[in-house]
Amino acid sequence: MPAVAAPYLAAALLLVVAGLAKTRDPLSLVRALRAAGLRVRAPLLSRFVRVAAAAEALLGFVAICRPGGLVALAVAASYAGFTAFVIRAMRTGSPLASCGCFGKADTPPTGTHAVVTAVLAVIALLAATQPAGLLPELLVHQPWAGLPLLVVTAVLGYLTYLSLALLPLLSRRAAR
Image 1 (tube, helix red, strand yellow):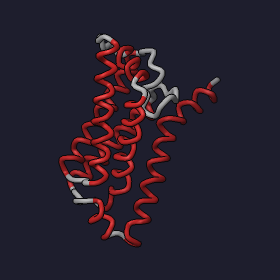
Image 2 (cartoon, helix red, strand yellow; image 1 turned 135 degrees about the vertical axis):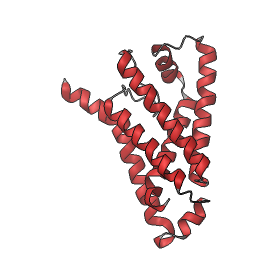
Image 3 (cartoon, helix red, strand yellow; image 1 turned 180 degrees about the vertical axis):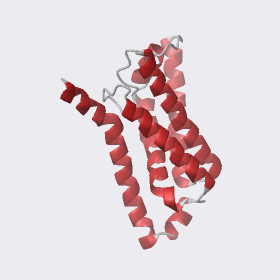
Image 4 (cartoon, helix red, strand yellow; image 1 turned 90 degrees about the vertical axis):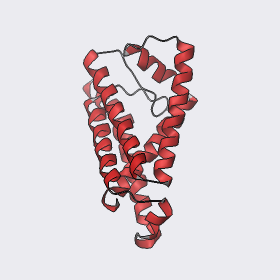
């Protein structure tokens, strides 16, 4: 996995961040799911979203600590599901303002969002073909005990966050 280690770990980190944000405040995703056509009572849907978001965060945490083949496949499936949801929201023209992935930011579904999540799914699939074992094992085989890998992971995670959460806002402001 060394070739895709940093982007894969960044994808896993984003699962943790987004999952925790939706666990704390599930309302944006509840609205997004209802706008996409899911007709379930709000209290039940809110509980489902919290459980699913906690599972998302847990998957990201496990993917960081133990980036194995099956876990990487689960990460790939998650991002493939996110991609499908974004594409559906864009095609149906639902009044989706935000999925709540990164807290309160009002981030509508965009082509960039779909491309980024699709790329993250492919990266996770590639990581599944080259499992790395435990994170300490991965880091010990890297230069400087893995510090450059961790820095690149953090930078990639932040840049991906910016492209998903802030780029759509900047694009809308520029279009006005």
